[in-house]
Length: 443
Image (tube, rainbow, N blue to C red; front, side, top):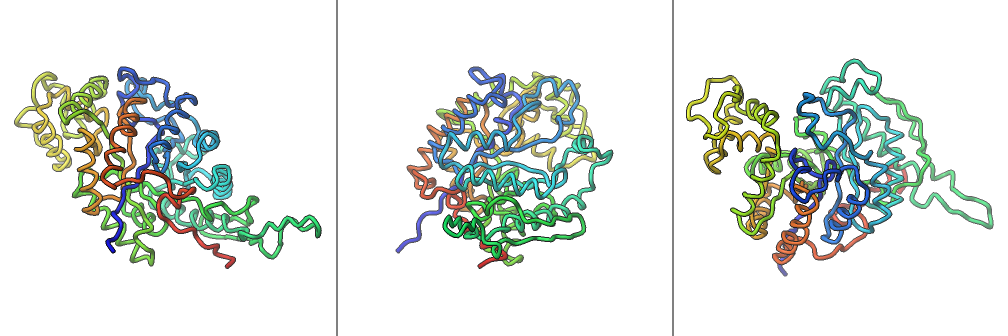
């Protein structure tokens, strides 16, 4: 009997609702989508209708540290706090997963354990924790620190933090709450574990004052791509949010993290690699590219040219904005690979300097731009060539960009047997094909 066809996992990047700088200006889009509950409810319900695995929220603990001229054009200045929003959204959905980012640098394990356990209970087993160490140095000043903790120290704390949080989730055996009216015994004290953790960075007594989560542990997501980030993912994560630039980089990242997981004694199949990808759906490649060019055109040139200059490693402000990229560029010590990528993109799509700058100022990461069939072909290539287990989709504009994916791309993937037609389980772990962790302290 033939093995069932491998299927994609799809999560939706929804904080901000689009990573593209021009998204809020696109015709028909909702400029206030990041901070409008009515819109966010409509988005998550559309994603659930399309059978997405999860609704994924990034988070920032400070206003982004960018020049004020760029900041004033950004639609990411304000957004809901993830737990508050996801708790509300859990009550208007039934199956879709709810993934929130929470920092191991500027929060405490007891807080994180309680919040995610609560969300998992409120949602009947749909919570996920995206572990981040917080990269924005401005965040430190919002938590009473003059200096941002050094990179390696942040990851060292994160590894210990994970051990504490998962230990707290296992404070109660699954059957600890007997609730016996006749005897008057509510909870079995033999099935309560006091953690008594004392480590290099953290000291936490426990136990957690909430029952073990529905999923045992909420799904663990990790979003770092540095060497320490990859190792943390290999040891702890069940899904990895990452950003390879192309399929070859994706294959290398996939092999590296899965290989590290195997070396750590884990089943690599219990770790899903889900690269972030902008998806623009059109009637054809040409139609989709026109949508992308229109979207890019809403990125202000002053901000855009600064981004292009960084990518090229040279000041591009003197180039003719309406002409092609100069054939000969000034010498630089910047990354030759990054520069070649810019030059190749300009040539392959025939972009002017202005269009190229707006591409880099809007969204310069992995993108799939084409008809539903074109994009499905590429998704299948990434899946079969082991470059990804699925994707974390970021939408070009809302609501239409999301609707195009849900109503046009997803049916094409389903027709090919690459994506589910219905949920088979009720928890996020079941959607992702992940086992429920055993309690560390009780059999």
